[in-house]
Length: 113
Image (cartoon, rainbow, N blue to C red; front, top):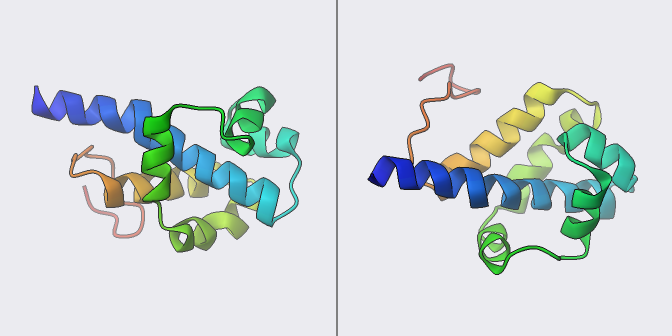
């Protein structure tokens, strides 16, 4: 069950923490509207509002504190251009740095499984 629990943690906590970090960068650092950030992230404007106002679980907040802002900023310009592939790359890279879970998703940079 170890791999399953790692998958659940990634899906339930790491991905939302990554989205929160990206949303905050888009809105706070790059003056994007919550509506546009929601469209890019594939979530509702209400979700972006919760991320911006820190109205989400403490566990997600704890994980978010471990996210390297340099990793997020590395992808922001491509994300702003609306390329969903770069959003996936950013979330995948964040997850890979925070979790030992091997999700078997192709590593975007290396092209490896």
